[in-house]
Image (cartoon, rainbow, N blue to C red; front, side, top):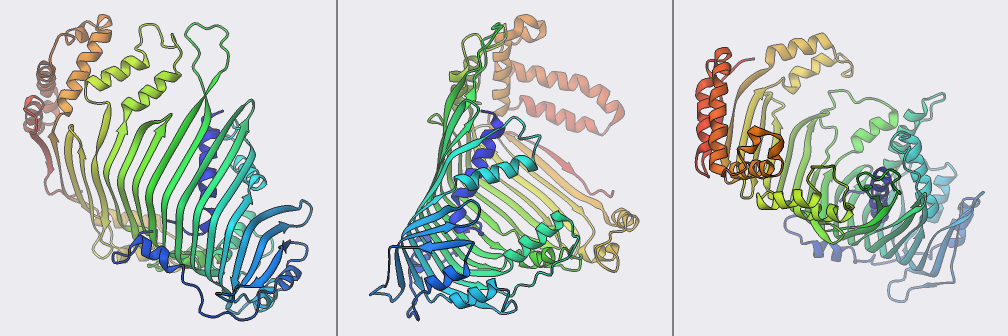
Length: 582
């Protein structure tokens, strides 16, 4: 099975795994509210309920589209909600199928008449509260036909990438222990149809209108699981994903206040083609099942604002630059991510935080990324790869995967870990722009980067887009950047905490393995990290003569770098840019 197929399969599985709570995205809890408290809050049920849920009225409205059936209907003694047992929802038409089943459904204050009127093209300008609350338990959804349809659509959209991937999903089934929808409202339908419109634009307008047509106070799903089996040619594989809890709060016409997901997991067994042994004139195509798995303790996104952008999408218009407060991509948080290959842990993230919540029109005012305790275990990855490498697969004289793994382990490069923070800010009032980065690679190095410049301000840019705010004038923009752009200054510092010795040790290991083919490299085979660093320092100073003939001011920096290479660990090299004008 091709890697294209595997990647696409996992992408689709991930999308389906969060389907019960779409159209949201994952979000951090408020600082003063615990995650458990947020989930507990959605358990509060309506204080009162009115008339019973009119199932037959809904079936009449859905004539020819779908039908709801059940074993029994009653009023719940404790809550007054309409209770349906052994619910079944079937789609009708040319290819009838069961959409989903549920052991039980509870409904509070559903306005079936309002839904019927909207479906009949009536009350399009009204705001309609369709229900206060719906609970479903023991939900089973057969997504096989839907998944194959989505996969086919992706293949048509990306024909070149999908040429080698001919996947069929033999089975795709989702189970959800319990689902809650609280407070669903339909908003006025405002899409105006246009004849002869481009199909792509028409699709964007329709999707934007659908996203803007409703709001949902809260939604939650518990014990979500998606199990899939897939086939490509003679190879087969399986995928499973799920989560313990998912929660949406405040979806409103494209805006999302927050969502939380806890206890997410995924696993799969996918066949990977094996390399043929070297010299095999008629290799047999074989594959080995690879077990992949992962989990994350917590993921979250908050502050998504897309409603205003979707309003322009519905009209099929480009927002003008004067629409300053247009959208926000919110903030993202992830904790406790772990990925394994055949039981070997190879990637971890302790914590990841991303902010992309401030824009002036489409221009970012702040983007920041911060990660803690990120680790990439190359030793583990190489051990897994070695298991797949048949004996004699390496080229003559080339190191095997096991030998490469041994080199990385001996040089301290077998596991890379550390922390870091990247920030890009643009002051839209003044144009002041700053890029900064701080990173720590455990037992290797720390570095800090700061770069500052001046760009046009937002007020400077607006006139360059014409009276309609949508037509950029290239000549005006070029003149504007020439007049305003300048480099203010910057600084870079690097502290060695082991990387220079590691690189020197790596050079020695390579020399021991292949030095016989390179006389100069062979000289390092019996060396030490100190002698290798001294040689590199000397070569740098030897080359500095030619460099300083062209750039005389480079000599002090090259001298400092040469001394830094031979200095003891924990020394710092630096590079500073003094005030400059472009």
